[in-house]
Length: 484
Image 1 (cartoon, rainbow, N blue to C red):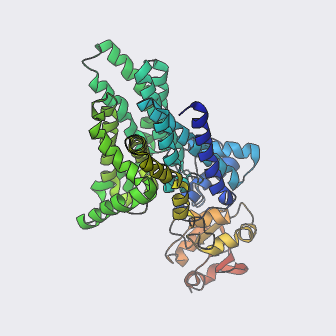
Image 2 (image 1 turned 45 degrees about the vertical axis):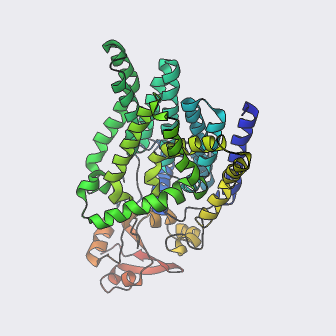
Image 3 (image 1 turned 120 degrees about the vertical axis):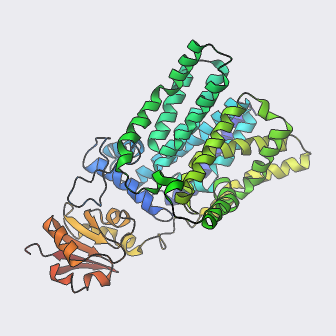
């Protein structure tokens, strides 16, 4: 494939993606994992509105505190907030930024495949298929730090293998920096350091001690950044299943096996790969053996990452369950290395008639992707109380912007506050007592947003309600008595 054709195909894949995403770019946050999206977007908004100190990300469910909420290092959130300073606070800015990050991942996967195999056609096939992974397509315009982590990780691998070929140390240093940024943006990507680690272990007979120490320093000098960040913040993650993983669960073996089966036979082929790319993925394994690709010097580092990724999955399967497909982002480069490798060798090892069939499979990937995901942005069924979406402007204007409020029901503790654009105390599962509400009032709560009649008609709650000031669908807004 000549450079002009390569560029045409890559640009075409991005234009098709833009066309598929276009109608959703100005929509507010809805659908699967909207709780995680509103959590991220709220952090973006708070950087923009309150404090651009990247070390002080905050949440809205904060009571009368400063709301400091440190999880992953908020590089992605801070970057979008910086764009808001220039272009204004608009959801389309977030979505377009995330789409650009996604396209950087696609170009990065092309670069990775070319660095590994030195073949333009193979690299284009893999990058094309990756761009139309259903989950990647869905998340690539949604505010998730996983998107930036994935992009950094893909480029990190590509630059590592680029260094492996030409031994220019600048590529190794930048690769290590990108692995560090990926891990900072999302902790699971720390497993990508297994690539330089395995290479160094393989090379102990090839290089002298001085050379090994030099390579190790260049590859790992920036690893101190995520290590320092997470050593600081993880102690604050009380009861977080991400930290305890397999060892902190009470899930039965039967349930775990059900998770494993679901992610293997449903999530992976349907959401991560795209059914249209499944044949190429399976063929990748076949040609690895047939062509003895495992003898290549790049195989062991990739294998080490595969083992690390599987270990991560089995450790976190309790948290991933059947629904958290974005936790599986670290698998993407591994999956599409196989897809690109399989597609290329299928195409070049059969008759002309079969080649047309393989081209057809590649060509329909955007269609099968779209059909699988077209309902993900359904604003009629947003994945939470639709009245929050329908009446968001009225609810935001109901009380002063700086007023502290009590809001619920909301199990996520993010969605309700995001849509009413307020700070304060959240409640869930109809759990709010008069004593708790009085304590909130004493600490500055001025209003109550409630979509539960079991709450606002409760005899213990009503003495603290001064008046109903607004009603929008199922959501009532009350002024609270502050002279108790």
